[in-house]
Length: 125
Image (spheres, rainbow, N blue to C red):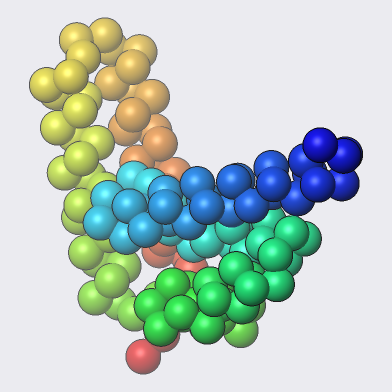
């Protein structure tokens, strides 16, 4: 397989994996949907016009990319829901999954940082 073809197949594989993880991230708040879909779009843009077009024109997934590019915000209901699910997941993990204080503090620090990031993203009406 020539080098150019290998790179194209590698980018397509990375784009597919990123898309699948992005879809999972819609339902699991600890997995960042938009960055994964942006990564998938970048991979497809460099490897497959057909897959790139399908992703950005998708009625659900394409909205994440479009809203990011157009610098649209996040609706307040989504912000509150995301932060609530984030804290339920992090606190559950910190309490039930580990008894190591350093790991519990790390998890809580991550939750604080992600919460601040979500709060600072512009709100959309």
